[in-house]
Length: 133
Image 1 (tube, helix red, strand yellow):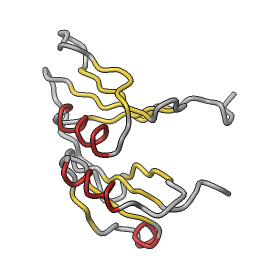
Image 2 (cartoon, one colour; image 1 turned 120 degrees about the horizontal axis):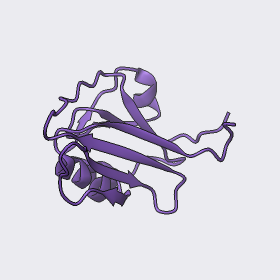
Image 3 (cartoon, rainbow, N blue to C red; image 1 turned 180 degrees about the vertical axis):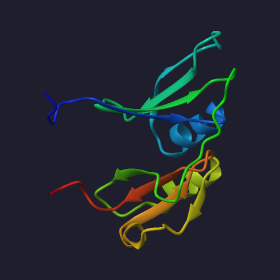
Image 4 (spheres, rainbow, N blue to C red; image 1 turned 90 degrees about the horizontal axis):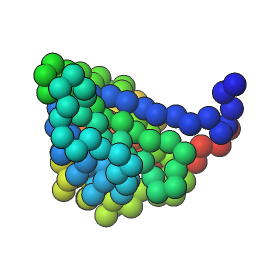
């Protein structure tokens, strides 16, 4: 049964796992939970990152034998609910580690946060709101 304790993994392809790691670890502040050390024929290279002690993680994959080119749209979002104003030093770190600050396709995210495009072209939204319904 799916309930509030169910673990979640979000996965998507990356063109450059090292660039993605810089962005999500050095920039956003997530920790590396797992990474493959060397390519194994027939298997994907993996990078799993998540918050320290968190119940979820974010997986980035790369298959050097048959690479997928990431094809994000303006509405492919990874939203992080901070519950406080977005710190400018966080945005600065994300830009310094390969991100680009952009205007969001949906103005809601500009009203309540900041959108930064990651090195693969996907959008990370830092939302100042909480996840309360």
